[in-house]
Amino acid sequence: MTFVPLTTQPQEIEQKSFEIIAQELGEHPFTPEQFPVVQRVIHASADFELGRSLVFTPDAVEAGIQAIRAGKPIVADVQMVEAGISRPRLEKFGDGSVHCFISDPDVAEEAKKLNTTRAIVATRKAARFYDGAIWAIGNAPTALLELIRLVEAGEAKPGLIVGVPVGFVSAAESKELLSKLEGVPFITNLGRKGGSPVAVSIVNALSLLAVKE
Amino acid sequence: MTFVPLTTQPQEIEQKSFEIIAQELGEHPFTPEQFPVVQRVIHASADFELGRSLVFTPDAVEAGIQAIRAGKPIVADVQMVEAGISRPRLEKFGDGSVHCFISDPDVAEEAKKLNTTRAIVATRKAARFYDGAIWAIGNAPTALLELIRLVEAGEAKPGLIVGVPVGFVSAAESKELLSKLEGVPFITNLGRKGGSPVAVSIVNALSLLAVKE
Image (cartoon, rainbow over the protein chains, first blue to last red):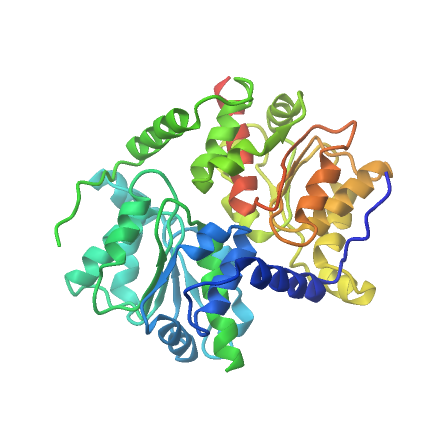
């Protein structure tokens, strides 16, 4: 076997990828502000259909940039999202903290007692602490449903909701509900697809914009 | 807004999802042994095309189960993979350790010195320690390319390679090369798609099989 001449230069790899994405995506409905976010989602998923399914409120990208510049924390629904979010850029503006409560012993205990998901209990816990945070929900539809309920009840005040859970039960429905939510900036996508790398790539795209502009 | 009656029962959600997947997937080329792995990948991605693109060596599922039962460690290419792999089932057979070297300071330093990716240097480091391990590569094509090179040079002896990196540059090529590798069991998929949740869901499916059978 001979090796094909594959590049091993990290920056070259990223630059080439972005060129291919821009080329293959062709016409699209996104604003110049939204495009870098869409591009990074496609980069993380190699899925143009998923990229095209993204939905933004008009103020979403700016709200994300401002939340990061104000040093607001990130709330992640699952540990994979927590692990993927790049810290160094966040730390330029605050303590760069990313919170994920889903594996806390008190959350597991409460979920068992209430016969509900740990994601729901973790969402209630985070809502008590982090006004103005960016919520990054990539996995658990029940986390997103609970966050929407808390927002409507005036019990949660996110700076931006990144709601892109994946799956066959409740995921598409939860994002459909989010897409109708008023008064809070959000980024979501329609359909079953989504996932932790999508949530992560959106937050990382926003922190890149926060640093650059 | 009224809430649609969405379930919040974790086991009910999973069971319903698996029913939908089996129904919608219809005919497929996978063996009964491989099917639970495919099902879990589709569950994690909501992507039937991705599920159908999976490729197994005939001994791959059994090799994965045996490696887990022998308490062999998991090597992850990135922290998102490390974060997603479920530990409790692994801990029934060993210390449940999942290793990821990509953020080690010595790896970063060496990569800079060699003008190469941290993923390549991290792969070399892990290969020195973990004979018989399950390698879970969900993100970095260069990690998979380096692992293939090390296997061919006799310098790495994986128990199973789960090689499903995602992306536009080198990902598809690295998986094409893996699909031709001889002498090592592997699970991969063809094309650009893949990602951390795919690698994670494959390893978690294998540990479920290791516990059940």
